[in-house]
Length: 142
Image (cartoon, rainbow, N blue to C red):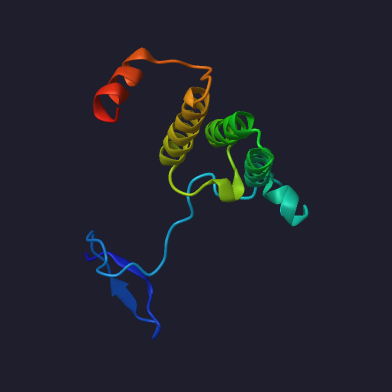
């Protein structure tokens, strides 16, 4: 017996195959992409994870604009790392969920870690010195 799906526009059941469609007509909601608070809560409360990350990033950008470069960029990286932790620990994170849980965690984590490390190594007077990077820079740029 052939597999059938929901009826088409005329009400006839369609035959389905295991092949992917030639054209994608819709997308699935990412896992964890539901509301982070009950549906009767106001909109900001339903999306508090993304608002927390964006608020911290905005504060970090403000600090950078006010000439506190290192503190601001560390805050931006820490906000992304916090987003990765929230994506890992919370079942529903609203709009913070973009792709699968694994992809979101890796993306937020790698970008957050890179921003924090670069902020700590920024010149002048870096807070973190990695000797082999200085040698690499010496041979490539100087």
